[in-house]
Image 1 (tube, rainbow, N blue to C red):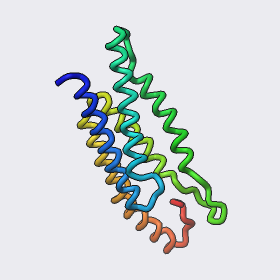
Image 2 (image 1 turned 180 degrees about the vertical axis):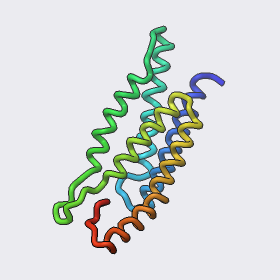
Image 3 (image 1 turned 90 degrees about the vertical axis):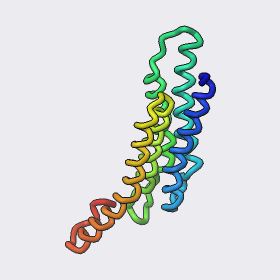
Image 4 (image 1 turned 120 degrees about the vertical axis):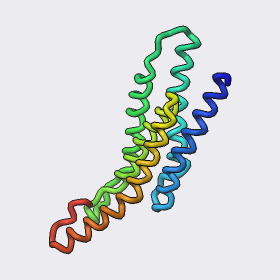
Amino acid sequence: MDYYTIVLIRLVVAMLLGALIGAERTFAGKVAGMRTFGLVAMGAALFVTTSEYAGFMFSAVVDPMRMGAAIVTGIGFLGAGLIFFQQEEHRLNGLTTAAGLWVVCGIGIAVGLDMFAIATFATVITLVTFTIMWFIEEKIRKISKRNGHADFLS
């Protein structure tokens, strides 16, 4: 298989894994959904892959983790845009979705570095965190309120 085909496969796999996580966010009624998550994962894979390819093209030693570090820094700004404070409820919103974008960025980096198994496993763990952990968190909140404690998970 030629390198361009490998790159196309990486980009498609990254986008699909990101979109899968984004589908859960869409289902949960969050603003950032399939397109956002898919694009973040694909973009991370694209940056890492092109960095790697540039090293081959120009016969240079390239550290793909430098690009990864830059990607993680950049995604912080996108994630920060999702987080906002609701004055009337004294509550932050968007933290979990922003954290999900951060993880999806890592998934895209893993795919861009040909770590498909790790990226797939991280996708599964992320989906478990977004779904099953939500139910556990809700039960803890109910117990906490029943016992007269403040809602420490808000």
